[in-house]
Length: 204
Image 1 (tube, rainbow, N blue to C red):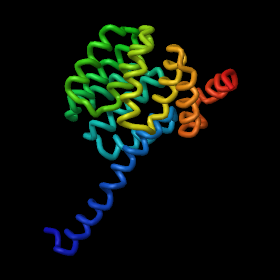
Image 2 (cartoon, rainbow, N blue to C red):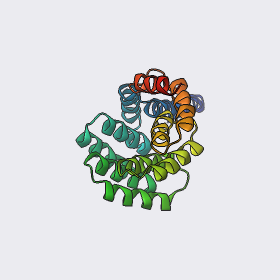
Image 3 (cartoon, rainbow, N blue to C red):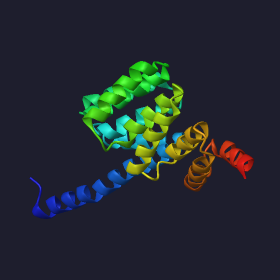
């Protein structure tokens, strides 16, 4: 049996580790939402190695792998997330993300609508629905979804990028400029940053 001193030490170590693991998920999500996908993958893999039952870490690792065009690996991570009791809304987002990767936009939209019915405070629902609506050339709907994403997370840099593009397609270059400027502040090293700077030069 452990002595009371040893028990106290074990408890202290466990409590000290918890914020580190939480911070790793937060750090990874920030990397994901600012398009630093290779770094995000490393962060989430470290977290899933440390906590194999962390459903959200597997979910975001899957989302990151989709962005890196590694759909089968993403599918595996989403399955692990589901086995670890991923929330129903995120299960639907994961399903939609794989469908989007296979250009099954109607099915993806249906899944995201179901996710929105299950949760109203998950920015990933509205971000991905915005992507689907933009793909379907429904730019007013895409603007609404991206703006809802940003209402939930103003620091979602990629959403600033896509809502700027959608505003440009709806005849609102002023709003495009506003969001592009925020995007460049939040993700100056993004692969899309040169394109954004070039577009800004055309409207100044």
